[in-house]
Length: 399
Image (cartoon, rainbow, N blue to C red):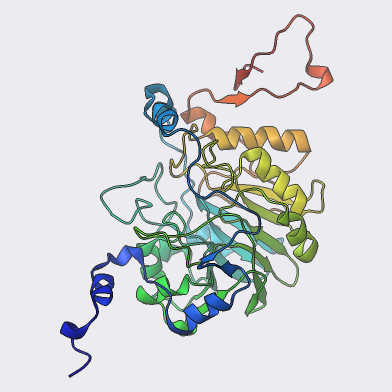
């Protein structure tokens, strides 16, 4: 007799015991597609440029910084982060310019573009972790319940890390009619969580799909993947281009800086707005996350080399995932934007804005954070004071 539980292989029995949050491994035709991918070699997906995935440097030095009492205090706000309570009234009126973005925190964005609604990397869970009782916890509440956002045409996932692909959020969205656009291999997780295969658009780099009047293209990124105890690199990571009849936007997902941004911009830009990862960077993992300065450089590359469009900083302010102060990415991005002459939006979580209109620009984080140290940069000629000595570090408000 075949097909009974007692006849299953040990590997199959172990898979059945795996926590639901770990997702599922690609099999069948999905696995065959992975093996045919030009980006898959020697059993894993490869980055467009070589990148070290694991931490580098001294583990002792990392621990010293991680457990430093003052440093730990700076990785959390000193008060309540101001959140705009997004409501249906905010979103009921179509954007006057045809493009409106609402940052929901971290990398989550609701983009209303040319009459369609796209939800990037939605994470409504309390923790970005496989377990509800442990792992990085939210620094602020979600701006609105997921159901109150109204219908969404397509959900776009950049990769399968817990702070971008959230089990409870996906299970709730699985009950709707939305389409899911995901990198190659990630569909296995979503099918295990109840998303029908018919609503999945699973793409390799430089492949596109049409949803209504939008064209979505998975573009390269420099990162890695994995949800289980064994990180097998069997699911792809991606940045995304969404193009409508009148507007184009770019979402970086998680990525280290690489020269490929210029090619993405040449093929798909220029963009009305880019959503660029500028947080969770560290000298211990320089290849897989960008600093604010690198994020600005990526935006300029995407726009053909000069300031254009609007940059919306993402991947900061909601979870503490690195050693830097929680609000440091916002402050440093302001510096980089000023240096480049680039328009940047700094909305509070949940605050809708139109890139073609007035941009939110207040440094709202300063009211709930310690003074933020920043690397020394060479002052402009007008800033030089003959008797003033430049230190290696200066503080916000003391420049």
